[in-house]
Length: 304
View 1 (cartoon, rainbow, N blue to C red):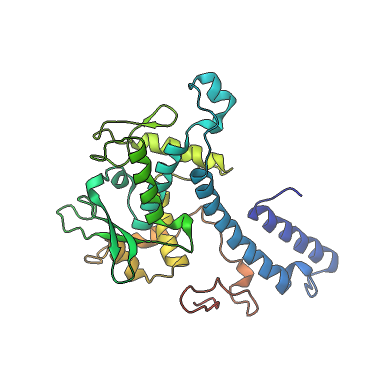
View 2: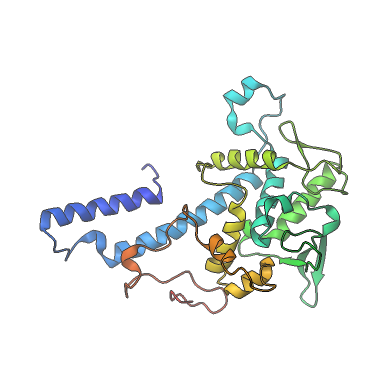
């Protein structure tokens, strides 16, 4: 059976409802497309589609196997556009995606991260591994006073684990004898190389091109997305998945000095291209499916 998108599934359900209403009048009693079972399935399907998208990109980049090691030419690019980058570039990109999303950084800030800004630490007494990110620059802190970011292991969701990605990139650079001074994310050289110069950072245009190619790899139209998508996605991830309070998100992102611009967070929480998390008819539906279980208390109610 051909796999379809969540939007297609919504249209199929709406078509069934319209057909049933047209044949049986305005009395929707007994309409199978509006049953509790179908409603619960659609909610669950939406969550699985979102989850599959974020996992698919991680799996594609981390487990990518270089089968095309020959010289790059225009003819080879045209014949195999999916070979625009190799495993080294994809690992670097995945780390950049993860960092920008979890730390709520603008992408020009991610591109300026250096090796001196990152420290690997063990926390006592459980010896939990974490990454300490101390940035000397932030648009929201023009005169210093930037507090560090602490990123911990996420063993339950390896595709969202910053420690795993930072360690993998450190090991990759060591194996390639890359100078671990200067910029962390270097200029892309050829198909799968990075610049040896510690002062040669990846440019914003180069990153955007790689990001769009990466989305095409997994069948996602890249046109609605840009470098600011990670800022928005990270804010929504903290609010809707981790269920952080808005005040905590503002403090973590560095937007809470004077709370002089409370509208900042809402332009990240709401976007025109967001996938709907809940159908219109299910907002007050007492029989709608519960949310995903909370990792701390296990509650599945919609208010958890």
